[in-house]
Length: 155
Image (cartoon, rainbow, N blue to C red):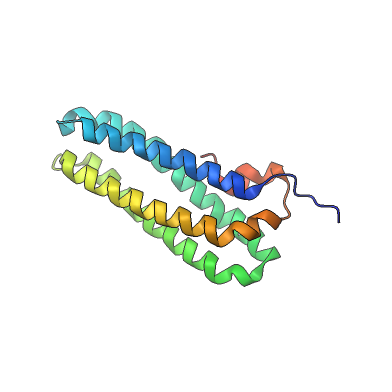
């Protein structure tokens, strides 16, 4: 059978997730090492803009492009995709809360660290479920490599 798929989608998803996890760990390190929230905020705002934008782009691309393509070929994955979409909404709210805390004059490094740990926990659980649940499907997904950015975002 001739296949249009020339790219290992499951590896690409893992690579995107790894890059996002590494960026989040860099922010956690900055918070751990900081002792004054005023000194942390410019660096964290820059990080948050980059990280929040990348994670948001990744999830929006999955919701708009990747999941529909996957469901077109494997409609039996609908319950898994529904759960992943709900998890995207939870992560989006956590990121928005973190951004609000960064803009607040009241947020302490301890509060920022608590929030970023909450993001890390939710993100790790989400990525683990997604990679595990879609592993077989990603290995057989029939889509060209050129769809990679459209389906997974720029993360």
